[in-house]
Image (cartoon, rainbow, N blue to C red; front, side, top):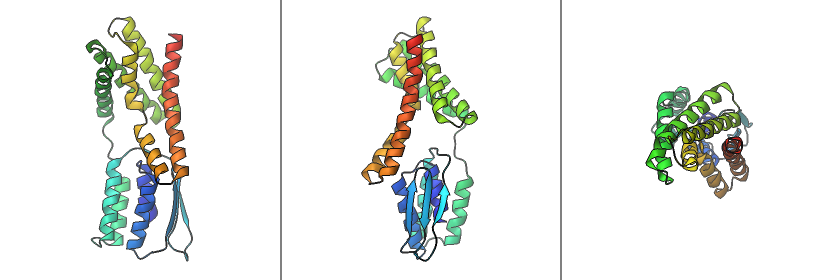
Length: 238
């Protein structure tokens, strides 16, 4: 049950120190006072007690689902206060793991498009740049979602999405629809920027989890590099 809780949280984007703390608290609530856990972004090792062997779970896919993290935390708290039994907690965790809280793809794309337009204006773009920012941001995020489902290598999806954003921005400015190319591009790539990864990397480093902090930081750097490389190719050749 502790491993299942940790797996759900880590796959949903939780910090490694939060995962370890939740697993330890759940173990203590069930009378396991000497449990040990070791969490990295790609795996969890957990030993309930000194008399029992350690278990390992491999984490392959990671996303952002704060609702699942909150649900697991709620189960952990209720287990600690004896409001639910371990059997009930395990059943709830299974339900949480099987649930899907993702918003529809159309809504994600529309939200990214609106956010891109707002960011374009926030970065001192003109009123004429808002519409190109909306269109570029929505198209780029749509390509990112589509390619990420087809190709599991996130780098190529991010590179292709940023390349499309840069290309569309150049076309719009050339057609006179937009005026400031840099403002349109900056605003449109904001939905792709790894803000949560950077935040979790810093929080893990501050909590003393150096391996997790550095690995999350490297993942954030690769994402930023993919975005920058895609835009750089467009700016260089077009």
